[in-house]
Image (cartoon, rainbow, N blue to C red; front, side, top):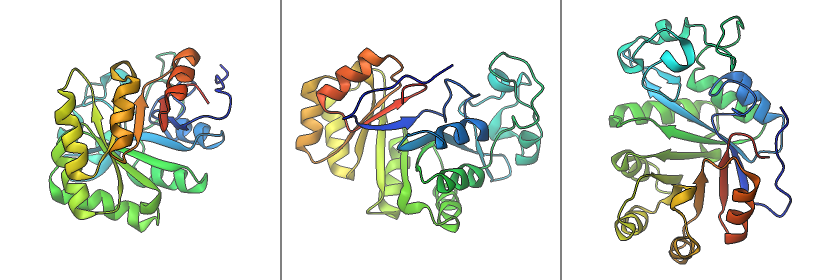
Length: 241
């Protein structure tokens, strides 16, 4: 499967869970596939394991990507790492398809000089966010990382800990728009919003406040072109390049 191409000029393109339109999401293979293409950044999701380590997966359970139903936050890092994932055809077999560590993801972003767009999954304790920051700092990639989360307290702590860090507040559902704007302004956060919730007027509101707009997850060229024309700053996608 080939990637779709949005003609220049275009917003910064973010590979959603790596190049998940081609490789299994949130694996080193998906991250490398994105690294070898023109994406500005690579997005992924980090969880805290039962023994306080950090592993890359989107869901709270491994069942969808690994058949075995393990609750991520109730399982140890080594247990999760030993799980062989299924390829996109739903079958096991590839030895490289395992859950990546946070460090492995950051190292791939660094190797290919891609911005890390890191979602903090679920509500995290400050010590866990501190630990995640420490892993990224150890790789020398903090200045090239954007933190995102649906959990506002996570974002507030990131802002308190790292006053100048790029950080985006994730939005879905049907939130009160003024409440969203107030949070962006109060905590100096950019917006990361489902593309169907966005309007030109909302983009103008965010830009007027001096903030940026990221949209997820856009997989149709016509949608990407419309959002580009509206002036979004980032497009997060599984397949468009």
